Length: 298
Image (tube, rainbow, N blue to C red; front, side, top):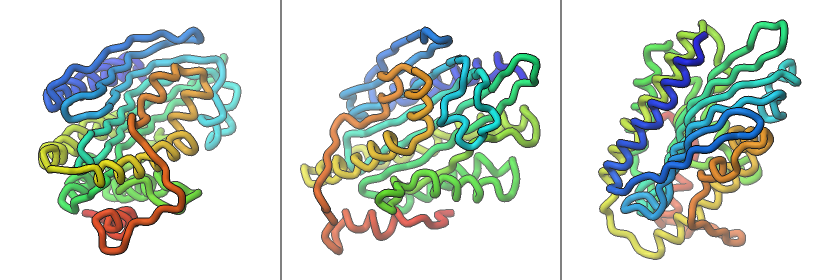
């Protein structure tokens, strides 16, 4: 286990993704380096009011603490009370055009420590797509790229992580998917550190290939206020999930993380309507009927 290798990978990944998205948008990301009083720090890269992205953030963090928060020990109660070191890259991109989907990606490494005991490590991460007006070819492309990235790691890995993603990004209080899924994994420590790190890198490295071609196809489609209103309404689901269920958001807030960096995932324009439902036969209804129910896209 070599944490210098993971640190170098995560910082390099942030730089590569930001460079590609800056070239796509034509606007620079603002860089905000920060330190954490309890230990560690990070680099937040944010783009607001760009040509393509209304808001987007690509965050690197490397934090340390004396005790794992409840969100990190929910599935591993035996680690309660251990110190921790956590590092990774987390991003959320919110394009302005409603025909361009929101995307999220996260790759991370945790190490739980205790004096006199061997450290316990694990990896987690994934990526998922949240369209507003969806196109089947886009969703298939996103899922196929995820599948190809995970193919070297076992015949069933993609299917397992795809199903895990469908379960995870589900708003239980609405019985509704946040988007069309992707892949998700956590507590990964089987097969050795090198294999787990390689799998995590495969997911991180696949993000640009999974997302950018969709943006290039849809960025110039015309739209009006109707589409913007529906986008704003569906973004409300994104906010609900991140604040109620998302383990990364909860970990950051519970561990005393930097609030601005944690909440950079929030969309800039969002709305809620009381008991609203799309009219049958409309493009908005098609999102609910044809895309949000989990299915095997590849």
